[in-house]
Image 1 (tube, rainbow, N blue to C red):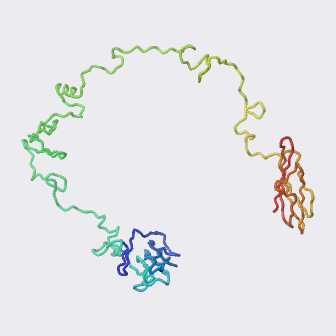
Image 2 (tube, rainbow, N blue to C red):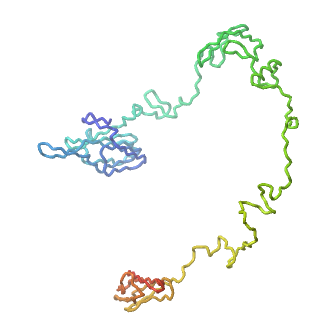
Image 3 (cartoon, rainbow, N blue to C red):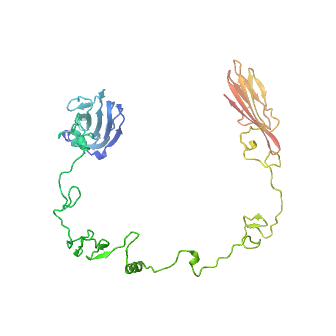
Length: 419
């Protein structure tokens, strides 16, 4: 909640739009929008050219329809850098506590409230941003470590210096990690109570002889010592222990040497022939020829001599980079001409003798208008219906001719473009 109780206003912060700009330097807001928080980083100056009025609603009172403005809040948050420039707000803004004194390296929050009751903009300024908490209101030390009334900076030596732990114990464990021998005495015949932390069940008390006789035994949850299997190459197991170990894993005795020749009931492996007959199953080759796919029953193998050398002849194969395959070829039978004229021409016609396109450009080199007449008849057709062009002095005209054969009859289509 942006609470301005001193002016009787309370606006829900969740309903306000936030505009963030972390770039430095001078800032200008041409028209501040209502219910908007403008959050800047470190700036040198701020100019708010105008403030947009809030929304309105209409209400009929005593048969008179009246327009009312909604209350609105405009918030500007920023930090002034080492150089403070102009700080400008619209003249309509009334500073409640007087215009603030802008200081370098200070953080500000300016709140402008629109009071719909008396149609005024009231502004007040806070030197720090309250939403940051109590730490934002404390200073950092100029040098050295922070005091109790200052905020600790990252270079405070107390954050990285070595600490010697004070003397303390964890049960029977000393600072060095060793057991305190004065509190725990272990001797032959002592009883140990071991607790399972997973279910807090205690094992039965058992006598432990610290004379080496239990070095290959493990204490079970039942309070008895059982022999465990050693990972050493020489385990020192008796024949009975070895037999028990094999029985535990379901293994038996064996004298197998590991050689294939010592196996019995080996299968007979047939000898692989050096070659296969042509009709001997799925053969890769027939008469020295590779067969890569199914061949129809009535297929006839003949030498059709389909191989062709690369070249440019009519019976040669064409390489993929042959220049004749390129699209970069000039179109055939396209004619363009340029004509400078200074007087009327009553007849302009196509000069193509075969199918093709012709573009004629005429330029009026004289000082007065001229008329270009285009010859038309049953087979010479002006597409746009224009059979003459008036060309002003110093102007160009383009005339396009297209000659083609339609149903055995030669037609010439004409289109004129005046410029």
